[in-house]
Amino acid sequence: MTADDNRRVLTYLREHSPSMVADLKRFIALESPTTNKAAVDALGKALAEELRGLGGAVEVLPKAEVGDVLRARWNPGEGGVLIMSHMDTVWAIGTVAGRPTRIDGDRLYGVGAMDMKGGIVIALWALRALRALELFPRGPISYQLNSDEETGSKHSSAEIESEALAHNVVFVTEPPQDGAYKTQRKGVSQYTITAKGRAAHSGADHERGVNAIEEIAHQVIAVEAMTDYTIGTTANVGVISGGTRANVVPAEAKVEINVRAWTRVNQQAIHEKMMSLRAVHPEAEIAVDGGVGVPPMERTAEIAALFKRAQTLAAEMGIALEEGRTGGGSDGNKTAALGVPTLDGMGMVGEGGHAVGEYGEISSLPERAAIMAAMLREPL
Ligand SMILES: [Zn+2]
Image 1 (tube, helix red, strand yellow):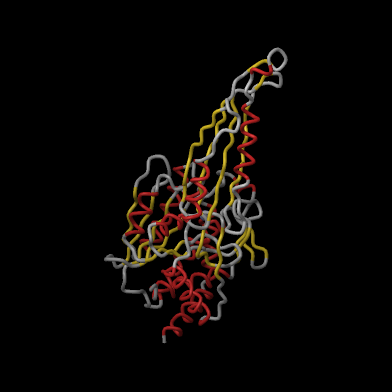
Image 2 (cartoon, protein in one colour):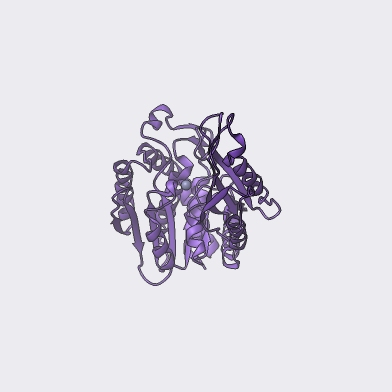
């Protein structure tokens, strides 16, 4: 019965695949770099129209620095499902003119196609199919689209967190790349180590100097040794600077570090190691700044169960769905860290996010929308 309805949804969506592609092209044409508020708001306006057309009660949450956050609600009430997308892309206005949208077989090449305008199309059409076939669930569904995910969602974190806490589950329409839904994402920490020594002329009185670059070199080795691939923790010294000229013993040197870890425990363990770093040279000083930026999305029992349900529902429709994880973060890290079961990677399958070869697989649009629709009907 339910499985039959889900198959009807898939058939409907496959029949409407050309309309899904048309919507995707339209949203790609509305270029929306994070840094251009007016452009993101123009896309937001078009999407607000779509959401109203789907019977959602739409709110526009104004933002001064970035595009306004968009929120729509159906059947408002306690709990329910929150769908999350982001409208912004990493691409400047004019990129589409130089790299027009084109279709090659099942591939739609386009700016921001899979990250994540395809994900927005999937969510909109999941809702549309449920309405068209009179299968729309009775429970609360909200759909929130933010505007600054690509720069870390600083301006929308409050809305993401409050909205997540008001729902029972969160679905994130990030692209899955390898096709797998994401049940785990690494957390991210950032650190800066500054070493201070003592400047001296390298010829006249080298022995009086304390070389800050030598000191930071010790620290670089210590930090790189914190990487442990067996547990998936990495500490990457990505930027180094220091010194003024070759004939001066440098008084200052600095490194920037990006740390990734699968679990909060591992993230905390490496934080403690960072904070316990000490200068090697007796006369040098070091300062370690930074800490946890994004908590990991951990694969809890609830998240594993959510995926299992999605996989089962997909299989009933003849769609193979795999489970995956990634070292990259998303807004799903934030909602999962609050203890709200989160399923991520529900967007358009493809390759080349943030790269010039970005494409999404057209056949994944109806399939992914059908899985999302089935999950909206049976989220728990
Ligand atoms: Zn994205």
